[in-house]
Amino acid sequence: MSREEVLAKVIEFAAMAFNKDASTITEKTNISQELGVASMQRVAMSASIENDFDVMIPVARFGNFETIGDLVDFVMDEM
Image (cartoon, rainbow, N blue to C red; front, side, top):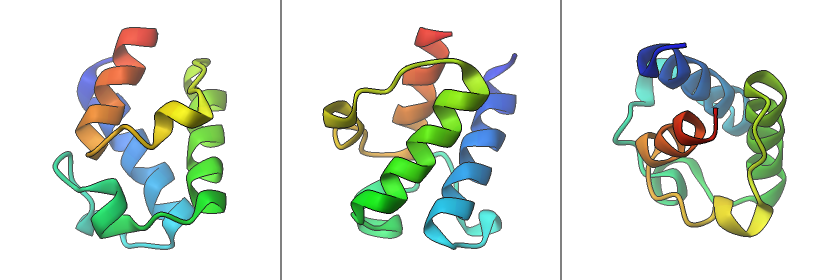
């Protein structure tokens, strides 16, 4: 799977979890500042990513991802 495909899916999951329009989310979107810090939304997004890409995102580590692109880089490394 290409990075662009992973990015598109992660944006889709972020939009669903944070109830945002996917067209407003980009690789440079700051997760905490632009999407929010609600733990339930982060868990939902993380679970979707883990299920779809068969990767494990440690809960404590999720907060370390500043942007959507950082999260995509992690997923690409783990696949």
